[in-house]
Length: 177
Image 1 (cartoon, helix red, strand yellow):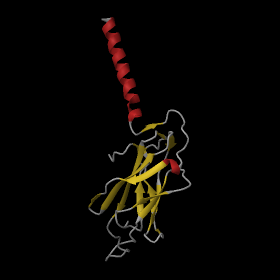
Image 2 (spheres, helix red, strand yellow; image 1 turned 60 degrees about the vertical axis):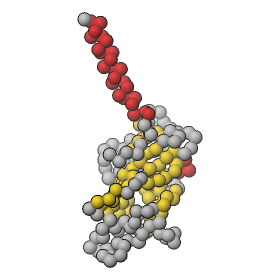
Image 3 (tube, helix red, strand yellow; image 1 turned 90 degrees about the vertical axis):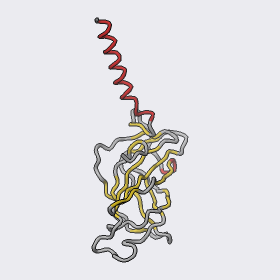
Image 4 (tube, helix red, strand yellow; image 1 turned 180 degrees about the vertical axis):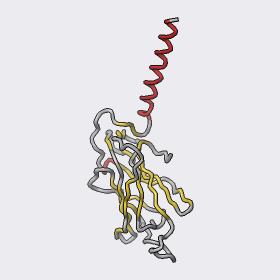
């Protein structure tokens, strides 16, 4: 009987260890050893598909490590909306607290992402006919701690609410759930 108990304890311990290690095969992992901070030049930016309803807009902002070595990120991305003529459009980034901000190690070819949210209907003090705000042609994305940005096309229309975009902290992978 003692042998069976030992076997069960061993199986439970093994399952617990596997559960703890399971996150390391995802697109990014919680940092166990310090990787240098990701430089903007090591990343490619992209957006997922637009999810819209009842005046709300959601899109996934994704950074992919395109370098040959791992790097780390921690915190919130920022972006600046830009018009077709190159002029900046009013952009107000608001950090939405969704739990603990974690340092993520991003291996080559892997991704981290942040859910962005904004409104697509004008506020009472915005234009009611035509676009509520100027329509961006691109967004200049900056990873947390980055000194430079990278440009990504913006095909989601104007950002009403005076350009306010809510951002969640970066997390491993690209699921929006």
